[in-house]
Image 1 (cartoon, rainbow, N blue to C red):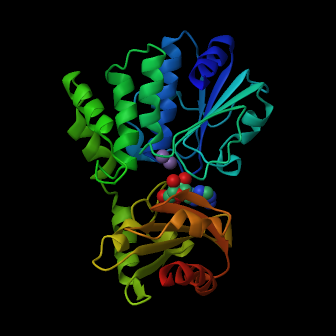
Image 2 (image 1 turned 120 degrees about the vertical axis):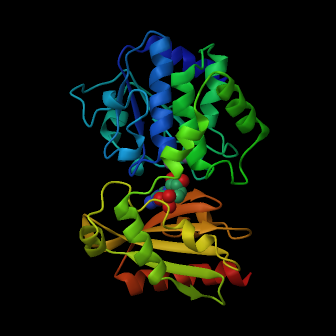
Length: 319
Ligand code: AMP
Ligand code: MN
Ligand code: MN
């Protein structure tokens, strides 16, 4: 039984590190900090290593404990959360060197790169997987822990809107409300607050949006020049891919963003509404994700990347 193996490894380990994916979102940061609180209850003192935490998550309990690096060379245990792929894991050198490794995730495209892999692709957030796990470990889900978990659930479900939400999602939220967690405050902080730079990027994104494939696809982009001009900070591109998806008649929305480290690479983000599995499309570019939200890195200039992506989308839209 995997849950028993996980608790056994946690109990055995002295030095534990918690890791997650690059460009971390609410689920990545929420699940990492939730795991930290839970392990502290079990008498451990884990390190959480995350780079580039967006400012909107500064309110999370334990935020100030997040490290960018560590001087420990060999952890007894490394736990990866919300990350499908070893390549995207920030601090994967700690993972590689650790004596034992555990991967906990909800991506269908997870590559099972741990010694123990606990993957539930029908869970709407990695944070929701943690609820059942912590209950099994007899951990008390208090206000602090609940705030971290709820942040991941709210961000990954777009505020309880996406099809992956389950009765458990609402039961858990109701239970936290009863415990005094300010659900509407978390919601406002992580979903309803835009930075000025994000708003400026949104204007450009909308202005450039093209409708392709009979209006079934939207395409738009952001370059490094844009990011510089609007003085964009970490995470200011979040949410831009959702704009196209919400327009009537659109099945797939495509948003590409130039990579800061290489101007000939673009981070492609895709969202779909009903029938296109964008994770499969992104797999063609060695990316992945979920059926209705996925990403990949593609080489070329804007026009070339657009062509490559549209060629793949054309195949699935014609079926
Ligand atoms: P994003 O468009 O960056 O919000 O990502 C949407 C989903 O796709 C997330 O669940 C990511 O984990 C996944 N994803 C994004 N980029 C990649 C990539 N380069 N490789 C694999 N999965 C990705
Ligand atoms: Mn994530
Ligand atoms: Mn997630």
